[in-house]
Length: 498
Image (cartoon, rainbow, N blue to C red; front, side):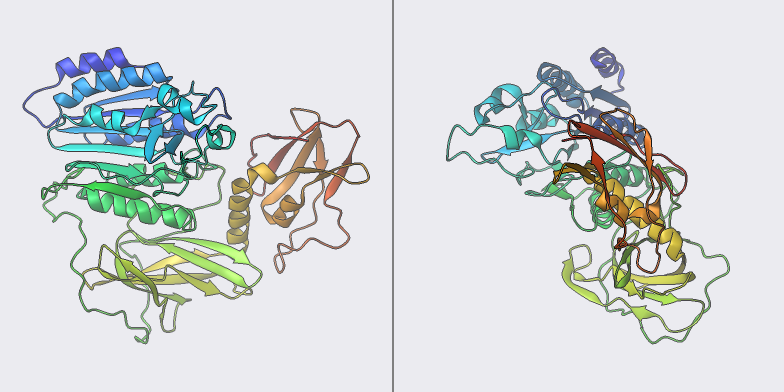
């Protein structure tokens, strides 16, 4: 806790200049349920992004109890009274009961639905802490994760509802509340160092000339692309006519904003054009690595593309850096561009149907360069962008992503003619695995399990002669697992109980 530092900063802040203050909270070490590893790291990263975006006072609070959370909000409300911008970010567990949203302190136990008022903090209390700010009031909640309190909470009233995720809300004018996932959805904590929402938010915050409404629309696009459309961030509330920028563009260029939709259409039968030798914007498939955020988090000016393998071929999914009304691609150095067509979805930023952000490649597609181009909201064709496609690299990367997403199901105990320990899912994604280590009743794996070789032509099939389980001694109570990935990096050890 850094409340003393915050109090000192309040007194020292200049009165004349525009002031921005933030309270950043990351709750991960919950006492009554399994800890969340990412919120404290997410809080640190968001705090760094806010400091780099012009916030003079940023206070970080980690693993706050209810009393500590209330104390932090009380102290922060004093800072908000003297500030133009006041922002609260919370990562951790959130819960909705009877239409009221709550953030959950680390000491909450929530054994029944009646405990919520005594053990959690209503979102309205958070809004009260920022209501005195003069220009902009913003709450960012990365608190929509699958909530273990809900499953164990005793219902004391048949009419009291407990929601999945957080409930929609309508804050007063001049206030925005940004949810990592819209009402009724749950957000991913992420298998990497940070949640998908924080990765997108911290990347977008330092972008010069990016108006706040567009910033959150781009964060939405980034998260939907990163999660395969399983998670859609949502912003509630409204702002006055003034534009708000985390970082203004002082270069003299106009601010980044969506232009009115025009009638331009991307021609699908245009004559072939050679890609520029040195394109102004270059997109690239990120390398396979143990830390998905490695390599920096600077703003991205070109498309990002991910490839997913199935038995029918490859699905390429594209994330664009701005709204578009058309999207096309070409495989190789020559030939016509193919439109991705349009979805039956209206993009509220352009008022047009949204371009399909994906296209299909055949199973046998060899390594090649894919060229992408799109038509922006002003009708200008942008690109082409060269994208390196290597089927082996893409397969390993895609399978590793899946392995990390299903970390809770690497191993499974079954009782059938003894105790059997299955690792079927890992066999199905073995192209990303160099070595599988398993331990029985040991915190650290002590044996290597030999998996079948990777079959790139049919990567998910398990050979009929292979047995995807170990026979464990009758008294076995637990197992540990660790993976050495194809690039040599090593996973954390995961524990599984019978």
